Length: 88
Image (tube, rainbow, N blue to C red):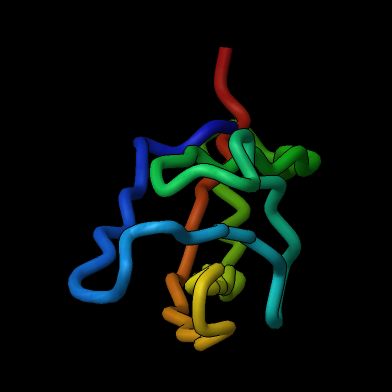
């Protein structure tokens, strides 16, 4: 399961930034572009064993933005929710 894209927009500062996405809590999801402002998250999970049912997973992903010139660090947290269905 891959999510729609998520974008972090940096405002202010000197303009040279590093970006790093990481799992903060809950069900882990992998950032497909872990060092870019826009990323999608992928989560592999087993589907439920009953047709028409879903497993809903949720976790918090953190984006850490560091201004290279000053070392100032800011974070923002994003909740990633995915539903894994068993249907065919």
